[in-house]
Length: 137
Image (tube, one colour):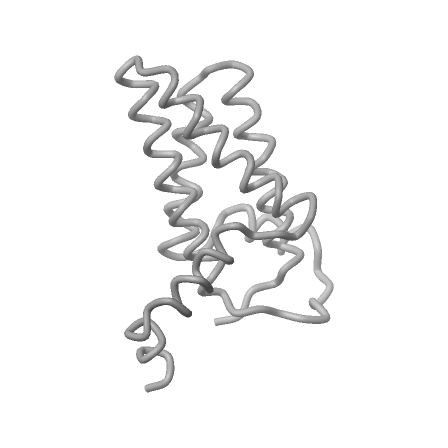
């Protein structure tokens, strides 16, 4: 499966805005919504990507492998869930640090096209030979 890098950066920009809203308002609800978006990005396709495709009809000049961005969505989901646990349990340092970490990763992708989760995926693939065998077969 291939992904449009423009849609991925658009999704990262929207995610950046949502997570910034969470930090400013200290509200659990936008974080819960973002966690759902991350989960959909892992299981199927991000709603932000689908919104991008509705707004932008042009065909991308290049596409990229969808596995690294999907992995990045999973990492984002882990941080969002950690933030939710922090909010629900009243552990504000956990809530704010987990949300801020996800915000930083989303911002790096939106502003600079650097997908931290994608880089993690590629590093894991290089370090774990068993992970590389599944693709070569």
